[in-house]
Length: 394
Image (tube, rainbow, N blue to C red; front, top):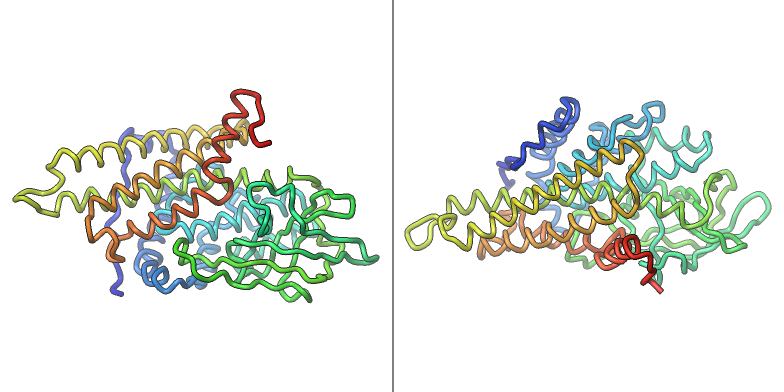
């Protein structure tokens, strides 16, 4: 497939750039330039072949996209949360799978090691994860336990100088290529704990998940634990219970809230350009009312989400953002982006399903993103419980 020329222009209908610092804008521009140069020309081909572009891992590390909010002493960027959000927005503008790789690495692998790990664990794992020398994955979801992770069956027991882990995880981004896995399992008392697994441990395998119609340029797999011997020093010492994995998910959901708007912006920009060039009935289709309605609704929803994300980022920087606020932004961003992708696909007509344009790829990716890290319905119930005080989960 011929490489696509990336003509993307970012919409900013309410002059949000005036709210960003010069450093934040510089970070965004550097990631945008990377996506235009390295991701856009190749991503359609990788998605068509359902292949992960493994060479980008080192590039993302060099660019500082892994653990941007982790302190510099551990190889992170030491950046604020708006900068992190802008990075995720630009990566997902390229492809949701690329953003997933960075989200998992930073929020689901590096964050728990930094937050709940020992100093020895931080020194051993974080610099190599930050640089992209190592790729990481996060094991929470199981074949029978997705939205209800507390029911997980993966478990470990004390075997003297080591632990013995059994169980399995599925729908794990990065798994087939990961050198490191942060895995959540129950101890003998039934408490959920985090363990750091390393590629090569006997009994630990990562079969690839095939046959996906979504996130086709992202590597997905299972984690299988068959009597895996895990050294006791690989147990995360500073957390027990669901608080551990859920706090990781809050950080990752924040990145998704920003990321998906990047995909929405790409679809809007593509549809707007197409509406000016495509002539039907002797005039550009952008001159017709129904096409203008679609575009007007797209830019309105993008603008609302941009404002929501900026405010959420400000609260994150101040340490005031609640997990429930992050849930709202993740759910809203995914919902409006899924709609924008579908409307853009309609505007492009038959060309909308072609790899010549990014719209159908974004549209298929969003079907995963609207489900993973808390489904649309679960996030609605999180908001519902927050505002009513009633738990509708049980």
